[in-house]
Image (cartoon, rainbow, N blue to C red; front, side):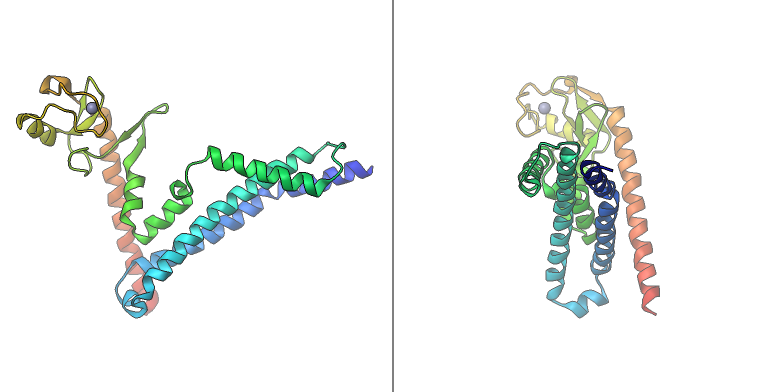
Length: 240
Ligand SMILES: [Zn+2]
C-alpha cells in the first residue's frame, strides 16, 4: 500500500467512527435526562437539596447545551476529514484541518436552529419541567410541506378548542373564544402582526385538520402525564 493509500485508509477509519462518537454523546445525554427526571419530581429530594436545586437544574441545562455543541463539532470534524481524502495536494494537514473545521462549524451553526431549539436541549427542559421550553415544543406542528401551525389560540394562549380557521388570513382560533371576540365588536384578527381588519363570522370555517392535530397533541400530553406519574412511582420504589 502506498503512503497516500495508507493515510486515506486511516482517515476513512476515523470517518467511520462518526456513529460511535455520536452514540457517546447520546448516552451522556440520556444519563443527564435521567438525572433531570429525578430532580424534577420534587418532594423529598427537592427538600433535601433546598436552594441548591436550581443550581443543579442550571448545570443540567448547560450540559445539554454542551452536548448539542459537541455533536456539531463532530459533524464539522467529519466533514473536514472527508475533504482531505484523496487530496494529495494538501501539504499542511494540521492547518488545513484547523481552518476547514472552523469553516464547517460556522456553516453548520448558520444552517441550524438555535441551540436552545435543538431536540436535545428541549428534551432536557421537558425533563426538568421548564414550562416555557415545553410551550415552545408544543407550539409548532408541521402540517405537510413547510407550513407550520400553532396549536394555541392566539387570544387565550391555551391549546385550541374546536379550532376555526379564517379563510382570508388563515389564522386559527378556538371557536367559542373567537365568536365572543367578534360579538364584542372586535374586527381585527387577534394574531400578532396580522393585517386583517375586516374580521367577521363569515370569514370563519371549522378547521378539521387542525382539530385532528389538537386531538393528537392531547393524547400525547395525557401519555406524558401518565409517564411522569409512573416515573414518580418507580422512583419511590427505588427509594425503599
Ligand atoms: Zn389573521
